[in-house]
Image (tube, rainbow, N blue to C red; front, side, top):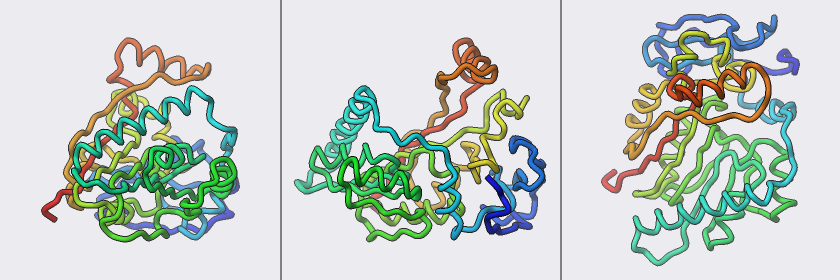
Length: 287
């Protein structure tokens, strides 16, 4: 990828909270390329971000360069997705006594398997996918017509519309994450649920030896990385009620030295490589 092909916005303050209390960490984790965004940290809100940040108009072009596997999911993976969908169906219907059609949105719908699975159980399901190839794959594979081929920053839906929104490892890719979270809050019905996943920088390995984690690909494909406290504060300021927030570790497939070290640590001391966080959030009825 040639980074000079894109337009960027340069920040002299935090791209999230606008504080001037920021520090340039250089190109740590960004393969030390000569033409490349820098990694910054804000010491007011705690977020890591790249600076400059790619312009929103360049997002479709950026996704053209991603090496994504477009093959269909395996049968085992599709069975897992349907199991997840059925579990969410039970949870959401327990929270509502209304006999109506429920609405689901996946932001970053990729191949469209979750959207298709919710359709199968009778929900009205929608997706947002900025990658044109994945958008076309989901249309051709599942004949889905409720997916928008745009970044979330450009998408609009009615207020109080969705019962469940999936936002799984997309937040760290966005150009304007706070505005996107505010949109999601408006789109949810009162009592609606946001299921959110994103990397967690607050683990021992990241703090002691960031080259192992590379600041979670900041500058290569990610734009923001949120410490749990920072993310929690943002979500609460928007109005979300945090029902569950946990950090966790998983085993990763692969045979590189970096992956082998990570998997050994995952086995003997998971907290040291708790690279991820997941949250269940609710839009309250009284707002």
